[in-house]
Image 1 (cartoon, rainbow, N blue to C red):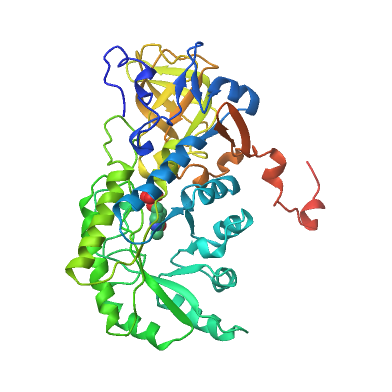
Image 2: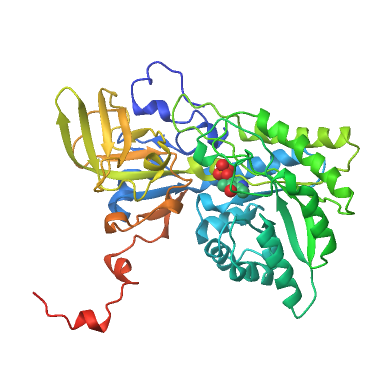
Length: 467
Ligand SMILES: *Cc1c(COP(=O)(O)O)cnc(C)c1O
């Protein structure tokens, strides 16, 4: 939890975690964040300003300890609060790359993927298909075939997909039923940005309740499909526990509805959605409290309906990795619009963090080389893209900032790298994994050559006269 010490209140020190054993999603900085004797921010035992000198800027800095701690808290809390079998799977769309897949796998978590590319990455990282769950509302036949070949579980979203799966199942040389779960739209609303709400009736995801019986009937009549269980995901960056509690009853009612068709529901997947702190006023429950609520709600819903406990799956993304990473940028110029605003320009922006321009997300920053300096300036941190909306922080409080200072934006582990683009042909940043004073590159910085790697010049254009 953040410090309430008034002596720290007016500097970047207030964002430091008070202990390294908290719930990572309730912090702003990674659990290992400290300030060293040069007044510089350290993460994973590495001085951030040194990392930038070594690996360049902008730089994603991923704290292995925070990621592993969040994974362990999910895993261990299910052991503690759920009497049946449970599994945590990482919603890898938050940040999918080889190193992250490996770390999460080594903590005993499964992986949820939402495209052939995410699936390919997980497989290349050595993840077994048994531990991969494939989501998406428009998976192609080729993507489905790839997932089936590796014995992944398919999270079926719609009729089209059910029919494609039956065809793919019939075409197979050896008969082995395809493991599926059904994604259903529970009709549960939660308070989060409308673009990241998925549980309401009007959603592009999942089967509506009106088609439930027909879907169960179809699945029961097609031996190519091996129904493992049911899934629902109500949205993302959620601070309330009640919607997750309500979901348990809805899911277990569906499990009863399936019995009529001789389908036994062995697994229940409650999705993800637990929020993280992006600012000091954000107040998400801890990972342990979230798990406790979900586990107890499912157990109670089973008991009151006389159902056996299913295997329980949760699939968090943001709350596993969001707080584990920060992005370091170098300050270029500053500009004052008298009486209106102070702008600070940094060397990245909407291409490495598209969340502010997409969802109006709010972030906090510190100056890594001036951690204890007083927060005396109201500044707007602008990216370098040709877009007025390319603002990462609007009117935030920072110390006096000069060109060359290192700005660190906190909470950038989820949906930053994974949503990054090459807008304005910026090269995407490198990422380093830090742990106990060691820093290892996990994503190389893109080069200009990478930018034109897929470009082609047809002969006709090559032959055009050059001016
Ligand atoms: C995105 C997503 C998640 C993870 O959501 P978070 O808010 O990042 O925890 C889980 N399940 C599904 C189906 C998703 O699409």
